[in-house]
Image (tube, rainbow, N blue to C red; front, side, top):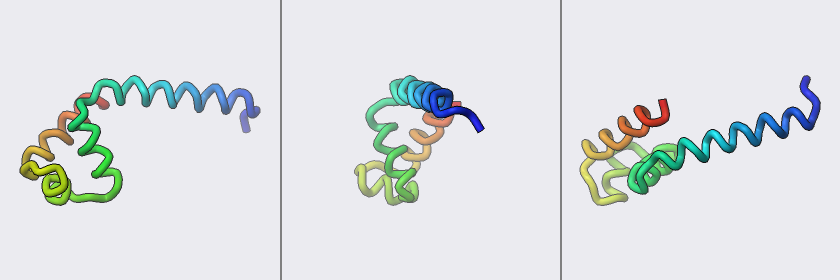
Length: 68
């Protein structure tokens, strides 16, 4: 097991990596991702955001492309 200081540094590194990746997303992609993480289906996300579920699918595909 790593010492606490090493664990903190590793965690901060991961948090910074997420910040960088998050910055690559458009506001609409962030909305879609947040709703998907909350368990909404593509159809439900479309209803919430007032867009077609096909558009949601395209946003989610772009997110995966950007974030790898």
